[in-house]
Image (cartoon, rainbow, N blue to C red; front, side, top):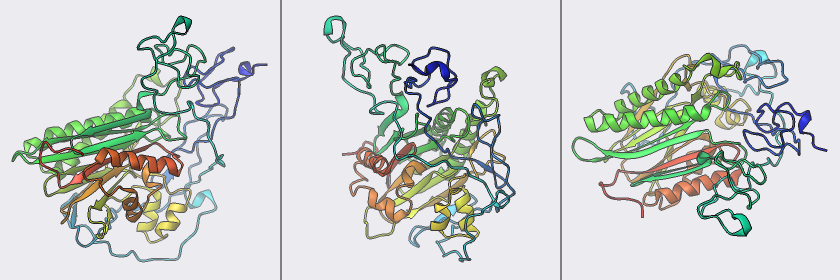
Amino acid sequence: MSQTHQLSACPSCREPLESGDRFCGACGYDLSAAAAPSPDTPTLTMRDGAALPHPAAPGDGGAGWPSPGPADASGAPASVHLPSDLPGTDSGGSPLSPGAARPQQPATGSPASPASGVRFDRPAEPEEYPLQAPDPRPAAGRAAPAEGGAPAEGAAVCVACRAGRVDSDGYCENCGHAQPRERDHMEQESGPVAAVSDRGLRHHRNEDAFAVGGTALPDGSPALLAVVCDGVSSATRPDDASLAASQAASESLLAALPRGTHPQQAMHEAIVAAAQAVEALAEEPATAREHAPHQNAPACTFVGAVVTAGLLVVGWVGDSRVYWVPVDRDAPPARLTEDDSWAAQMVAAGLMSDAEAYADERAHAITGWLGADAYELEPHTASFKPDRPGVVVVCTDGLWNYAETAEEMAEAVPLDAAVRPLHSARVLVGHALDGGGHDNVTVAVLPFPAPPQGAGSA
């Protein structure tokens, strides 16, 4: 007997159901199975050391997360750890730290009570999560059979049953399965810079977004840019936030650089433009939030890079990262950004080592983001003058979770990344998926220095 009449919400996406529904109208979940939803612990935001509440789930009485006591959130910008041959300056023009070792103090261990920090009630994660479709990538080049078994020219076929015709609303007319969204897997190559984004293996949608491109400076020399944004899953409309931020930042950079604006100043302005675009998403009619009154405003992280003939500029807010990988692998690679996260604060304060902090369940609670709920916008920018060719990897934590250190990232980057950026971005996304694909994964690859205009990937 079907159990659909006993369910008030979809077990997969929590969309409200009506009596007699066989499939979820939002995600296409087969309601006859009545499986329990997969636990999905999203990225949290932190304010003054406390985690913002999760959106209330049906049946929990609207209760959010408890508000623990304040943690150490000094807010002081951490130094960027770089090899001595890769000088850099911060957004104020001051030289960045060359990477002196932080003083180590005895580890405090993980707090056992809410009063000592952010409390996380992470449910046990199963080994396997059911996917909404056998393959998150759209089926290409297939035609659904027409009446009598003849294929209908130009018609899309369902990726689940391989037989039904896909209706205009994105669902199979045969089995009712929701088809992959356009953003489940995205690729773009713009001359010598490329980016790839994938939904991953556990999320039901891709909340990342990116923008890549190139332009010319007033002297005619080339400039490449890449922007990557990661939507905050605990906020409402994180996919809209990341898309709005990446588009606004890209447009700002493409307008400022040809005017002669210094790349580091242009990056700062791009972050401000991205923040304004995300904040504008919160200015929606009150009726638009009737079904989710307890959700936070749209939010996302930001990371970007601009590459010219002799200068590398990076900018960020949140925990997405930029890595430097020299073509000469005998030279050391480097991470060029510092996370706005609980783990980074613990390491900067000398309370934990990198390994201890990032092994903690609170590690990915971010302390900086773009959105109306962000208490203060603090754009981080830095400029570098590498003395040798290399590649710049701009990515979300969906990748660096599987290649956290600069050395691990360099091992994952193909040797020919400077001349095959799209291939290299695909390889890096594959590295994350092979590692488990727990999160959306997005990566952009830029060569340094920027090649002359007209040069592209081989």
